[in-house]
Length: 114
Image (cartoon, rainbow, N blue to C red; front, side, top):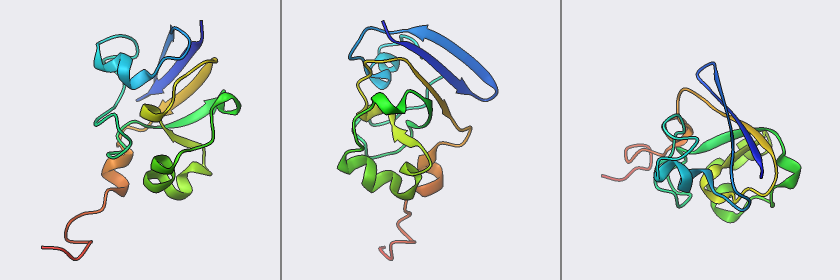
């Protein structure tokens, strides 16, 4: 069973998950890492589940188009969208106090639309 080490707001949470598990799905059904995990749409659109991968990234698939579109250059810094990842190996990750969605979400005004 893969082990998950999750950091948020100076706290560390540790748990085990079944192989081929998605953390956003688990949080949605109130299992570890709920209630500490930030997530939103679960489809790669909002970016609330953006997580910095600290260890175990070598076992993840290449970022998909949704991650590339939403995260851009932050992928190179080690960020991934947890909703797009089905975990099969141990992983250590963290989420910032301010969700990535609040940092990079385009606003209607910025897009030049009414």
